[in-house]
Length: 424
Figure 1 (cartoon, rainbow, N blue to C red):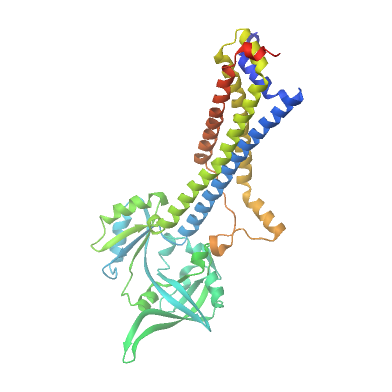
Figure 2: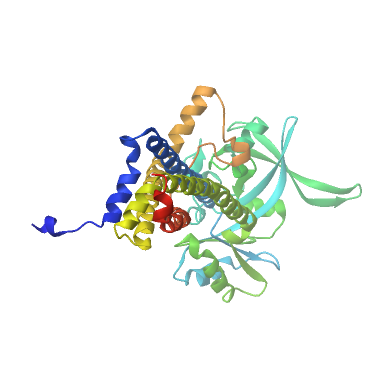
């Protein structure tokens, strides 16, 4: 009895009937249904493309960021006036901040590595093997060695990025020569400093930029080589990488004169800003596909209104108001929009969640490489679908579909019964 007492608005009934008209009807009705189906497909394709592309871009940004932060610190404190000889007291002051997890000293400089006839530039980082694991994940990316403890002071051992080692054609146990800009003045002029290092193992972070340029040595060996007189600063890790900028600003007030703090987002600001701009532009471009679907929906509704002139006129003579006629076609267009958005979200999420496997399969079949790691830093297609992207995409696509129904519905409501039935 409860269901019998519920009255379904006749506008909804007729709108549903017009939407399904092509299943059983005249050839014109089937053609209108085909046009409506193309509108659904266009909207679904646009929504799916937006979700897939933005998910891949999110995944790319997250993957590169995570691999980058596995090597670089969240915050880097540098003493601009000379060596930080009292780094332990500075580290104790830094650790008083509740967001700081660990701090470790470092020495950093550039050098040229030579092995035989091969010469490669390198970013040389001098680290403290005891405190470094607290501020980075370098110890988790080592090959051929178990820990950073192999970097003993005075031994002049070196850990090379895997791609850098391959470029130099060296293996663990081989020796490489390092030349640094800090030289010695002699009667013959400035002579660059050189030192022989023994390769102990590899660093494989999965980030090509670091694996092809980074070399790790003991901090004391680096201080001797670069003549810094001690650590140049501190590497700091915080509880949440997104809070690094705020923590860096708060730490500045506690640092000694001449020292400053820089967080990871500032050090790589240009790269992340470029990714954000590219993401916005790709979203705008791909949203045009949804706009094409909306135009298709306008066309299909206009054709439906033209074909159903007689039906509209009969409804008007039976007492249907202009508002009721408008609601019929708004309902029809809304159904198309809902179905298109729903299919688009479902298919977009399905592909986004499995895009890595899909790309790997295509690469295997056609023997191609979509992501050369020398260009994109990573070789696997990442994906990170986010509700903060999916909800706005679905909402705006639905609102665009709803807006596309207004003009055809208004034209249907303006139909004059006498004119429409004159030749019937």
